[in-house]
Amino acid sequence: MTLIAAEGIDLRYGARRVLHGVSLRIERGEIVTVVGPNGSGKSSLLRCLIGAERPSSGRILRAAGLRLGYVPQKLHIDATLPITARRFLDLPQRVPEAEAAAALEEAGAPGLGGLQMAALSGGQFQRVLLARAILGRPDLLLLDEPTQGLDQAGTSGFYRRLAAIRDRLGCAVLLVSHDLHVVMSASDRVVCLNGHVCCEGTPAVVSAAPAWRELFGTGTAGALALYRHEHDHEDHVAHHHPVAGAE
Image (cartoon, rainbow, N blue to C red; front, top):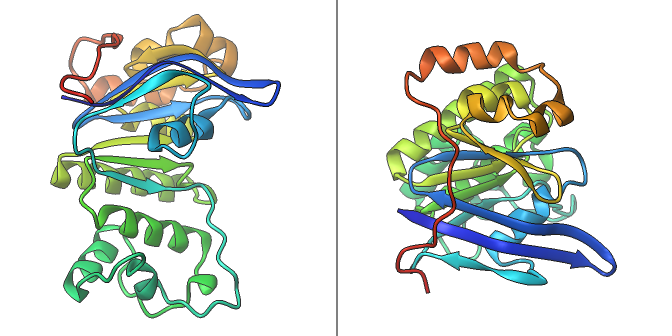
């Protein structure tokens, strides 16, 4: 089931064209990672998908009743604002204690509820944001560079946590990442973006595309060996289809 689709979207900030002709679809249950160089429009694409930005042209189609969970790249909280992680989960509406505790546990943030948000480390902060995002049982979980500041082991662990959340909720996961090695071993599908979609498909297919090698070289070979070992299926490149029953 296709949850959300972008069809030929363009996005401009004044005279600057950030996205041009971008088409993308996300199916229920898959983990899709968007990669690309700095300034390639990755965060802008996510903002278009969640409705925070309106494309200059093209359209976004969403399945009826689609529930979104979003973890932004950055969220500034004034250090003088006294708000604990547990209270943060109550925004914009109160959450039962058991649900809040379960979300913190699943996001890898048990025991952080009583700490001030301003006192959390970068990794702790991102895990609390993840807990808040999954409280609404989203159909699609979107994350923008959620592993910034984590080492490779922490990044791998975060991806495993996302896979477990995907399995429990039956949702799709779409994230922007710069962790190419982890991406290649942990994603069902990879989208390479540089203002437009350069290539997309399974990690093995994308890594063989000339556009990928032009942007990133061949440094993901080790991760690809792991990917091929763990995924014994025929690689294919996704084709774009309209959302069934979308409004």
